[in-house]
Image (cartoon, rainbow, N blue to C red):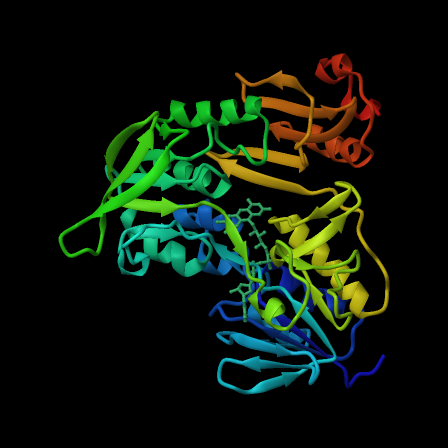
Length: 415
Ligand code: FAD
């Protein structure tokens, strides 16, 4: 290997940080430059909507590695630095101050940004009580609004929204959740589990308006804060008073750099099984990448920590000339009211859901079958089930629904 070579990584998030350290761990001896536009070294986002919002996790605990580790690994960490262009012919990236960095290999790990809610006639940047949640400053901005007795209107019943709902309830905040979908987590889980999760929130006093459409907001006299959120449900318009509003309606992948550089983009930067874009000198990983999935039998773009980590290691191996695609099955976790929900596989297309354990006792697993094959599982409070389910889903095991439901039959013996 040429020690004069340089790998530039754009985006110092979960995936970018892992590419950098993984390159060193896998024996890369060239220069590694990790460029990120945030002020913080790579950090974990999951606690942002959980322990960090609650004040139980401190800032330094979010960091994936102490800053000194990057120095020790001889990784040049350039924080607060935005890459504005990729010039593939020159093999250079342009930084916001106009300076340039040359690369031999470039890894795009640019993640995504919160999808904005369209509010005609309203400048969301002027509103002091409407928030999105993607970064440390986002949480720092909203924390002081989460005061007992205040009313939070949450737009979006996905993971981020529900986790914030749980944190808010624990802080004594009243919560109303609005979504256009008829049930919570509708994109990722079946109606049985959605119903269970919604029940857990209702038990804690959360109110749901679903399916309902946000028609707009009313503002205070200065036009600087939302006073009410206007929703339409069953053809009836209602104004819900709000002290604070959080919008969690999904993520837009940051693909603009790749697109402007002429790389293939289709719901994410298109990469092959080795994380290479349409230009083999340029790789892309994590939330911003659209990758082939042997498990799904199609291209997918995943938004999860396990994917960011596994994909980063694939990219590092590719840079080192070791072809090591992972046959990874997607998995994810969420935490609400201290209850851990673990998901493996993608349940889209299932034709049967089998439940093992007890939803009432908050210890159950929901197994999703398609043509008799196990394609996904959602597990609450049964970690051993999750370990077994990961293997069974990876094998797309053909399983007897009666045995799956029967707690006397050990899961590990199935498949
Ligand atoms: P990111 O972590 O978003 O990093 C991308 C980085 O690139 C950012 O720092 C961005 O600012 C930077 N960047 C972008 N463009 C440029 C540029 N031009 N120049 C320089 N820098 C740039 N996943 C789970 O598995 N479990 C969970 O419980 C969970 N909870 C979550 C809770 C919240 C509130 C959020 C926001 C996410 C959560 N996720 C969870 C998802 C997980 O955090 C992401 O999938 C993961 O962070 C993706 O890593 P990434 O490196 O691809 O992107």
